[in-house]
Length: 180
Image (tube, rainbow, N blue to C red):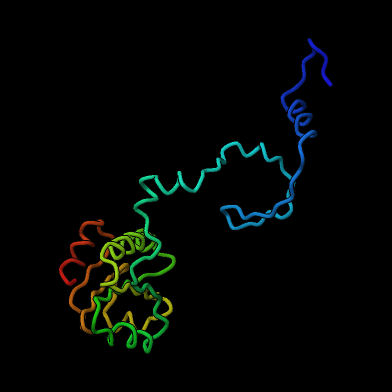
């Protein structure tokens, strides 16, 4: 114990306080997908965590607007030409957007979340297919893909429109609105 008038470092005081607290073993996953197993920690060290009663959470504006069921839409990766025929060409009910892209392509990586966001806005009226040009060179040649990203729009099995390159969110939404 400390006597009055003596000084002690912050860390030494913290260790002394923690010695008197019960330790809890827990396993949890942190954001970078690494697991920390059976770490001992002081429950008071997580001061940012706050328990909220269920009735308080239900009455918040954000929670009140949340719906657990999301619209049924499909987002899938094309595996080969046969898969393309089954999932894109034979689709007669929905607009299918086909994103020709590659894993190494920077603009493709920037376009992907924009496409997803635009498709989510219209819900179950649109499917989003991704074609990796490295894995499906025959499809890329068949549809004259000379630059990526290239996005094709298929309605009732027919190619009705396309754009090449990275474009803004509102232009993507405009393309979709034309065919939905």
